[in-house]
Length: 599
Image (cartoon, rainbow, N blue to C red; front, side, top):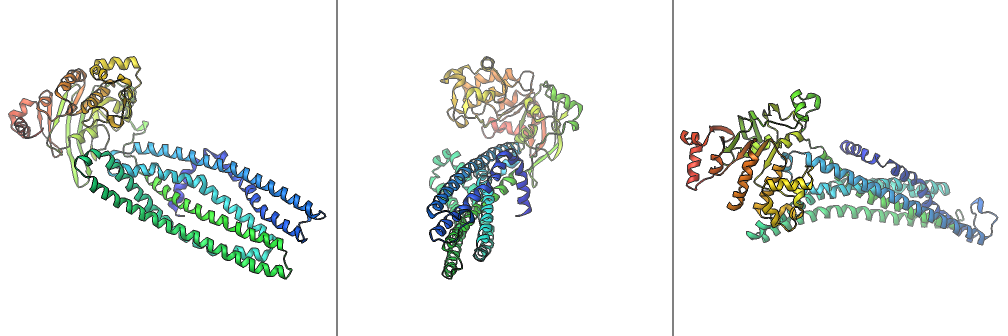
């Protein structure tokens, strides 16, 4: 096992430590279960020896054949019942440990995925991430639920059977054990090849899920542009690649099974030939030969199970590798330790009030090193000031919002909120003070009230009052159950305008000090927009506002306009000042008035 595998396994041990009692019980039961399996062939062999009047164990001496048979049948029944009972208890505990392990790892993996920055999620397809959270974690559970403990059980069974065989007849015992060596070495070699093939299966499964998720989410576009045949052909290609990868694992799995069967049949044939000669020469009794034949069959049963479990373990190690890779993804957006924050930041983290001053100091940022988005950007927004960000597509307007919310970190410079570097503020405090309304509204499945509350603790009467103040009464009256009306995934049973109304309302409920809007009224019809405009004006009173604006009417109402071009601030001022200057803003405004461009 590679050192990286060992390190990842060590990382998983704390999860198992929480079930150490169940694990300890399962490990303690290994010995009696193995003894129960090993004693059964011995009792059968003794019964045959008694029927043929051959020497039996000393404690059976002096008994008649019927008495010996009754004793041996009774002991065999007890051995079977006890073994099955203990095996049932062991299996239940092992499976319980596996399921608990699955739940804990999946919870931590999900929490870690949520903590990872947008930079990671931008480059990772959702389907591949889902594969790691589902099938990879399930494969890991099989390793600890049946694979790892099962391997220990098989090894203990092999050891007990080997000791018993050698003690009964050393020559035949040594012969059977010698046949295990080449089989074990070949299996280990094949398992290494299986591990590589299984990793490819996991990768192809992730791509399969990614393609499926993308096509289902974009189903409307697929149908409108008649892409069904083309996308189906692409998906068939992905499915074919997954099938070929699975075929590779089937080949190695089948090869291992076939090898064990051939060696087992050969070993039994050798035992029959050599044992038959020894019985004919009266060197060994028929009962002893029968015992050895039964042992030779049982000796390869654990080996078969070991091969199957090694297949599970190799799949589990692949899952551990992929899960470990996700756990090893660094969290870019981290809070500073409390003792490293300034006194102002510590105090600000306790007090929720905020004036809303925003300052960008020489901020530079790039999603890729070869494509800078913001370059040495500096500006300040006074408390309560309403500022509009305008500029051509790709000028960095949305990036400014993402950096302010700490969804990304700038490579250079710093961003201040009320004179405090936002990296010193607790993330929860920072995002409580920022109210963001994006153009692309996302609603969770559930009901309207849950989507308005999100993380806020608001009573039903208080929520009703806030909705009334924010002008949601007409919308709620149209919904069949008001605030309790169920919403489908992404709010699919609401119109775009209705989703946007809820998005604005849930920001207003949180009473932020800085309101950030990315064309919040873009999808509203004129009537709905007029209804919302008065509520937005009330919401903006006394708050700092940063608006990404594309409409001239929105820009004209701003206290100040910041004009961005290729990540640099090229102009700033009021609407009239910038029109009079005749620069980029004036050009964009003229084009929009003629219906040829958006700001």
